[in-house]
Length: 374
Ligand SMILES: [Zn+2]
Image (cartoon, rainbow, N blue to C red):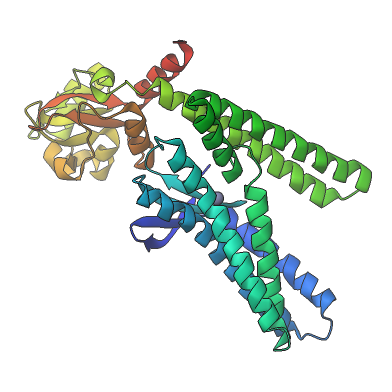
């Protein structure tokens, strides 16, 4: 669900991106705030109302980004790489490049985000007081931001996955029991409970209070939290089960090869059609020159299939992703889904191919590993 994103840029190597759902939230926020300001301050002109709402929304966006950067800075300092920050429908998500190995790291990384939000709430609160007798919209913006940052901090400290509080909770259980597995279970259970309570609250809003939109909205958040909590539980479980599985265990040792000098027609007739395989490595195991798939053949009109060489349509080796024999299953899966790869060659340091990994087969293998209880 984090696929449809818009990349904004990079901050010290971290990719900053927004999920499309954020655009809707921004519009919703703008509409709700404009309406609110209009009723609260009837003497404001329309440009004042809309301008104030826009500045508030923008600074809210920056606040969420600062919260995620808080997690990221602490993570990087503690040796956990951060790949990207995604701002999505209910806030943000910092995508770490690996898992934390110590309870302390987990604790400080998780607490850093809410700490930034509390800090921002104090700063904006102070500014609201200082600017109180000044141009009214400025102090209104500051006051609103102080409030919302405090809400963000408190909401995120609820002790259940996927919220920061869930990670803090996990770190504490991990610290006191010394058992990361039990800690994950506790945080997932916490997350589930939070989601059910929130769902009940939404339902109560819907039926008893008659707050239709608010009720549905809360129930939606609850459902989202529940999905995320279960998803995180599964992710940790997968990591644990796959920790010993490496590329050499997953590779198909006999991937199909085609010569770079073969014509497309020869390849289709003698390789693709008889074998039923859509992708081939180009060259030979000692020297992989590239990868060619059936969709590459569409680059050339059919009449030219006899005269065009495979070398002209393949993805050359230097722009091809590959993994080493001891790359971990989880990293392979992430690489393949990030770059949308169906096959990935497994190369030794000398450049010799010991096989390749097919995405469908990798997913099936992971499923089997998950089913076989150890
Ligand atoms: Zn956070």
